[in-house]
Length: 244
Image (cartoon, rainbow, N blue to C red; front, top):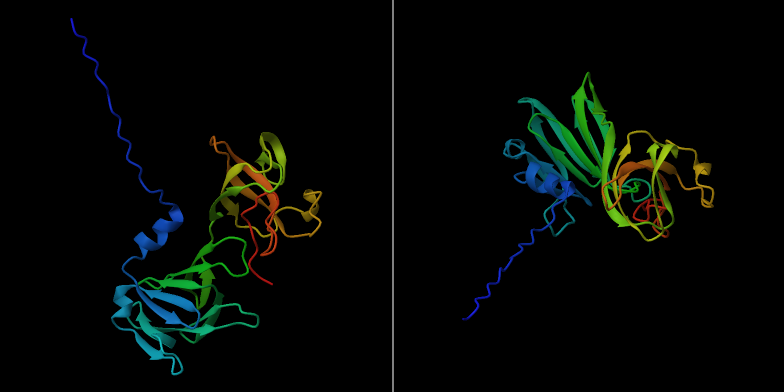
């Protein structure tokens, strides 16, 4: 009597990983019209772009503009131009209703309702994303409780993850140097921890608490220096301050 042997074949389909950062530009602003202004990029809602006027940079061979102006909220004219800054600090100079605001950053998205969405990497240790509104005659940042960091990297030193910020509360996890870690966010407070909280922070780089996740999925607060272009953050190695 012959025996029949059956095999089950499992087919795995690998889907590309899409981060929140990828979705922001491709989904939220995918239909926006782009303008190159100096070293920066301006993106306008199609409704604004239809009525926009742009002054082309006379010395440029590309589609580069020195000034873009357009109506917002149906009647008020807003204009955007580029300022390289005193030390290679790309800046958008925005004018509306006689008020002028300089916002440092590399990408600016403007919605049909006049909200400004700014992306800044220079003079930051991660890509910071902010929202601005114009009210009571001035530009104001719409405050977020956290800034999204969304960086995955290896630790450059032993990482301690605590229940609370600034190494306070219960110790949740201790990861050795070289461990994988996901930096989720940072609270919207500058220099939230004293620099001497990292005893071997010989460079006196700015120190902050970051919300992080272990490979297993434990979440807590970790203290790290911001690093620089020449050295990684400690112990969060993917943090590098991009500035003077």
